[in-house]
Length: 91
Image 1: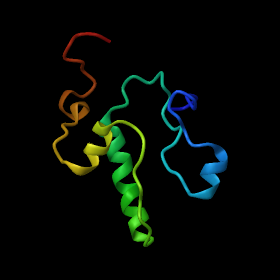
Image 2: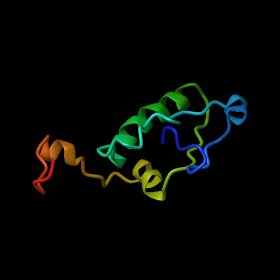
Image 3: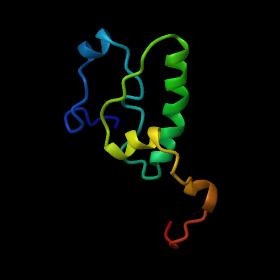
Image 4: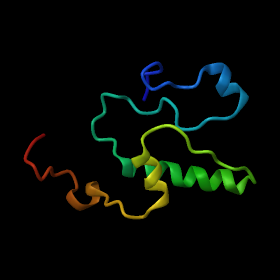
């Protein structure tokens, strides 16, 4: 989450210089429609890119749900199912 360095125990700039990091500080915490599907859809191509460079990606941080989204193909993309319509009638 962008701007939540202490709350998320984010690696320091010094630590980031030691090893390349991806997907850090790219989500505004005020964005409420970012989902685990969005995470997966961004992470999977990045992981493939890292493997293509003969490197080994190390996935850390976040919740177990996000890591599981990379391992199991059971997520449903509700944005595709519902489009812009909220089935609960709010917003």
